[in-house]
Amino acid sequence: MGSWLRLAASIGAAAFLAVTSLQAVASGAPKLERGKGERCVEDVEYMKRHHPNLLKHHRDDALRRGIRTPKHSLKGCVECHASERTGSVAASKEDFCMACHVYAAVKVDCWECHATRPKASSSPDRRALPLMPGLPSGGQ
Image (cartoon, rainbow, N blue to C red):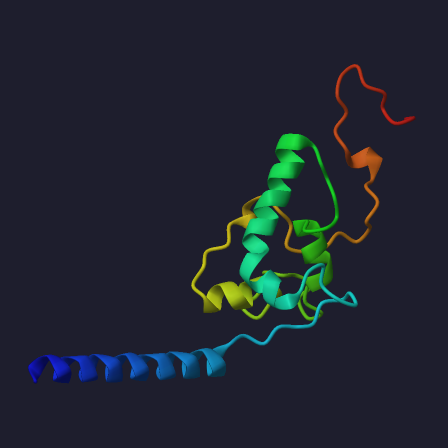
């Protein structure tokens, strides 16, 4: 009889924790601004779950293989999801990236190297690029 009582107590405790966890998630989930594009590059639910892997894969392709594409690029995410209020994806706890990562208690280290705000112009200013010895200076 004691094992049935323990089993019933365990099931009850598990059910209680599940219900309270779902309530906490539903009530405290971050509210995100809609992106600037018509739709995301992938399904929203897919992006919620897989964006870290997509960004890592894109990073590996760009850095190790020299393949640079706009789909799944961090730059594309920043350009689309920068807040209307702050102009950034990480300037405040309410901004697109930070809202979810603060909620989930996940450290984001992207911004140690990458910009959190889109550039004013999408075309690079060749004068701002460093010149390498022996290479043409871009007509200057």
